[in-house]
Image (cartoon, rainbow, N blue to C red):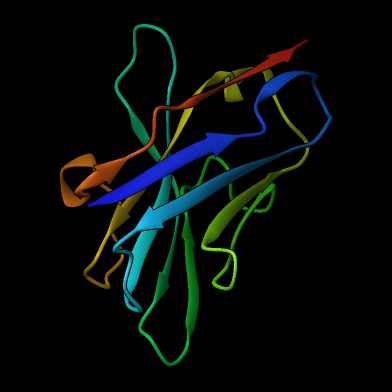
Length: 127
C-alpha cells in the first residue's frame, strides 16, 4: 500500500504562485510514476503533470498544455515527496488538486492509470 498526503493549497490572487507538496509513504519502491490532477466544481478530474523515475535515472516530466510554461513538477526521492510549483496562476486554475502514484513507469495522463490517490488540496485563485 502507498499513502499520499497533499499540502500547500490555499487562496491566491491571479498572477501569484503556490507550491503543492505530495508526501508518499509505504511501499513506494524505486520505480514509479507520480502525477498531479485537478478537479474543478462540476467538471471531471483532469491531468496536470506527471513525473517518472525508473530507479537509475529519471525526472522525465510531461505537462498538460493548459499549464505548460507556468507549472513545474519535481520530486525529492530522499524525502519521498513530489512538488508542483505553480506560477502565474489564473482563476481557471481553481480546483482541488490531487496527487497520484503508480508503480509502473510510463507517461500516464488518465485517472484510471493510477492505483493510489491523495485526499486532495484546494487551490483557489481570485481575479
